[in-house]
Image (cartoon, rainbow, N blue to C red; front, top):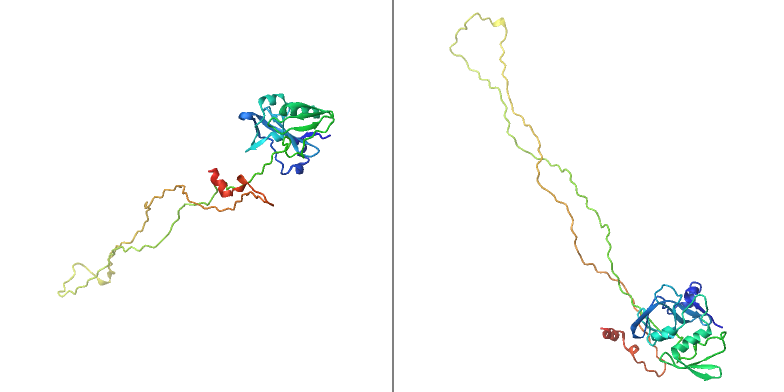
Amino acid sequence: MSHLHRLSEISSRHTDDFQGTYNPVGSTAYIGGGQRIGTVRDVLVDDDQGKIRYLLVDTDGGSTEGAYIVPIGLVRLEDDSVYFDELTSGQLAGLHRYSHDEDYTFDVQSSDERVLRGEASAGDGERVLQGTGVGTASTVADTGTQARYDYRDEDTADRMFKTPERLRLLEERLSVNKERYLAGQVQIGKHVETHTETVNVPVQREEIVIERHAVTDARPVDGDVSLSSGSETVRVELEAERVDVQKQAFVTEEVEIGKRAVTEQQTVTETVGREVLDVNQTGEVRVTGDAALTDDELRRNDK
């Protein structure tokens, strides 16, 4: 008998088993009419196939305890949300709620599927589950609580327990940010430059002038004069001008210091990639729908 386990219990130990598998945990869930019912908190995976079988939709209580248990095949994926378009509030109310203390057994799974599909008797120990828009009719063997639940993986027409196929094409886009950094420093100060200036300054000085005149009419000197009595000296002081140089500082210029922001355009070039859809055709096939359009045509349609 296969058992169901929460993905959160085993993904930490078997991460490699789920690479490439769509993980809807954290997505907002809606039912028919666009009614929001909560958030996908976890998924149930069967230990036989390692496939997601049910979503645990919490009504925003923050826990999987009491969460709705909804088959993965009822999901329509759009953006980052999940939609159960064919699920009504009445069906939702009739589904079993998840409990940590009990297993989601064969009988309970069968009961929930009857709620989703409706039931008619088939006889011979079998129940035929009639389709109600959520899937085609299928047969489930009723062999007791220990029976292995049939998720009908081999039935391509029954999508109730099959993960919706979804291929995301990724595209890289440049995210340009700016950061401020110290581009440099400017130190502003002053220093003394010297040069030589020559100034012509007129200065005066006194010179002694001696003039000698011969006496043509000699006359005697008055008084008792003796030539041997000594010599007579006359002292004359001479004056002159000299240059006295002094320096004085004058304000010849004022400098104001500030800063301003200057905007300039810089061109940034980087290589980005995007994933494009590859459709390989083998044999006599015809591709219709969006897959037949080129990427340029898809972009024009989006506009």
